Length: 168
Image 1: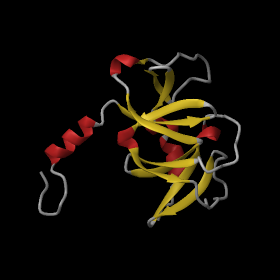
Image 2: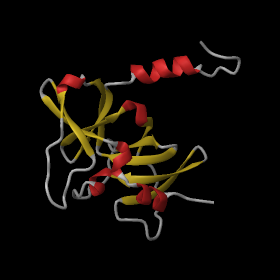
Image 3: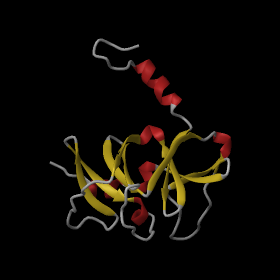
């Protein structure tokens, strides 16, 4: 049910969020399949001109202006300590909303939106020492594929997000 402004009511909003449980956007980065909750995804856009920002971390390629919003752009390959790759026609930017902050993630290619049942998700491998696996929340099994599930809120910590944002 919508109110006079065409907005969704709170009850419908809760139903909409619940309907997204178990749905993931899967994408390829360095020949590995990753997934993020579809509820975190705002939009998928093709690669476009990115304005570099001096003193940004190496994994932050710069910023874009998307309909009046300045959005920091992160190269997922570099963030995951993989080799940099030249962008091509399949390269995409996944615009996410992380705690009311828009951040774009460059990926090699988007795969699909898929359901992954909770019973088909196992905990991530435990890695000891300094190289602990903080981004991966689980490993999803899809017929013949393995999907590494990422927590978009952990790809960047609070300090890193603040460093990337344009503040007034």
